[in-house]
Image 1 (tube, helix red, strand yellow):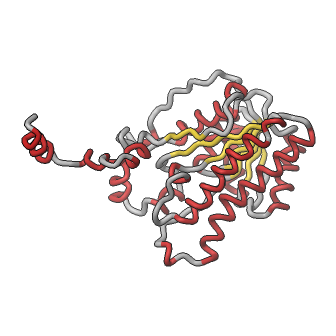
Image 2 (cartoon, rainbow, N blue to C red):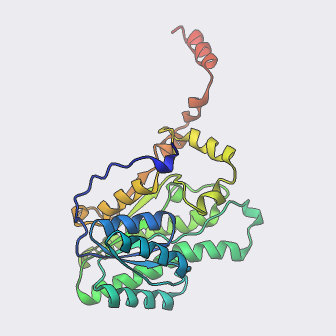
Image 3 (spheres, rainbow, N blue to C red):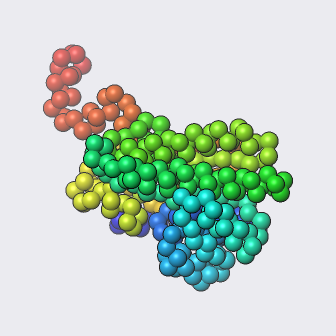
Length: 290
């Protein structure tokens, strides 16, 4: 069984998001699609944003076929005016906004000395500027209306450590993390809360293949994960639904790591010894008299 096919225990109460309106960027594929479908299954009306209308329509049709409600509000999140128009469409067609999920992202592997300014700007524009544009638009709406709101940002575990070969993404995700924690304090008085999820490797169409270009490399990364497998979109969607729900109202500025223990293994100075042969441990025992 592939990791992506693993069954997920659904633990949230039916109707948890009943009556809520959620706006999800990058909603046409991968993690965005999984969150959109789970939110709709829990009763939310969902607005889907992204640059490709065809993929957004596909998800909206899936949600409708399962008895939910979703609309397409295509936009390039790098364009603040386009973001404002997308939000207005969501509000007009679905009603007052309650939830924003900043999921739109771009990333690729590249030695940093080979990066062009345009390549760096493209990733930062989508991830950091795009998250700011959407968050600012939703926040202004909530503050003007005196309505509470919840923002969920999808970051990454290297947002606080950095990572080689993905410098644009690391810089952008670190900025989104700082925004999450900054606004969790600044906007708390407006009853607006912000949290984030830092996922580890989760196979999705497109994005995963750009970061793990061969099965061999993918298997090497899988072996680094203490849980012994990659995550699934359904697992992330279940956590996301809880974090945007009223059940998590007192959680503010938190980043929940969902990575099968990968980050913790990489953080410890001697964690690499997990791969050491038995003969090394026998030699250590001999030297210490154990």
